[in-house]
Image (cartoon, rainbow, N blue to C red):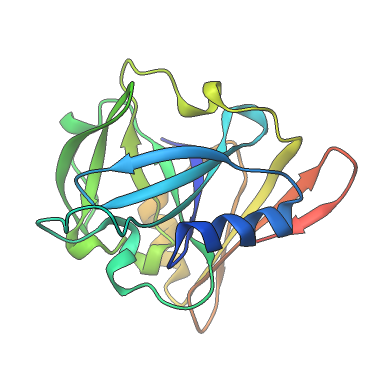
Length: 202
């Protein structure tokens, strides 16, 4: 079973992505760090129930990576937007990976270390509607280091022309927040609720 971990917002520039997210969410994001393997950097926001949100972009000061960047960032363009999500999978390195993933790599950022399933060509299956797969192992989860934003993820809606195949590939996701619908074009949207009752869509 997959366990919901975090949302991923991509941006061409991290500063623009953070500004976009903060304007919509009404709360400040916290600094993240750099990912040397992929030449990216990020900012983070804690959500209720141990989830979080990540804004990620190519780091202009990083050396170009040897392979494709994750989350399809090599081909990303346009305004910042929600592009995918990530699920926790215990014992990821020993599991058979779904179609579209090539292998598992060990990553570090500061005090954090984790295993990540690498998507072939850097593009997650089902146009990003299939989540990235992560195993935090013995590391403390990033959400434990983040301030309480007062925001809760209520629903992640995945729209895809191959909705039935996506359902079969995902199986059950712990937490019951995921809705999969058939649509002509792939799209992701997330509904969040603020403590003051505000409804926010990404």
